[in-house]
Image 1 (tube, rainbow, N blue to C red):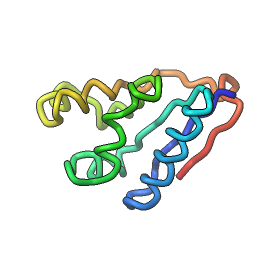
Image 2: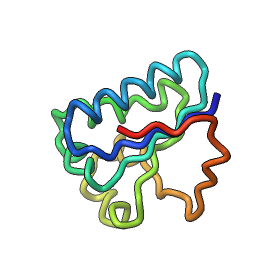
Image 3: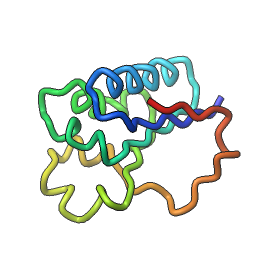
Length: 107
């Protein structure tokens, strides 16, 4: 099953639950794509937040880099984030075909 999980709520609990679900589903060999909205970027910037730590482990779950929208992802992001975290993020594609995913979940 191909699943898009969007993290849009700027609370640590909601972002943690969404990311934990993504990692769990990936463990069971679902194709999971994370999308981090601008509202959760503040949590991502906090080195002690759970989201910050979990995002660094996407490779362990064979997950692709998380998508960030244009207004968050820019040239300065690589300078502000540790390299191991910046490597787990990429610009969201210009066109997202929702038909490409079997399920879209929003937290």
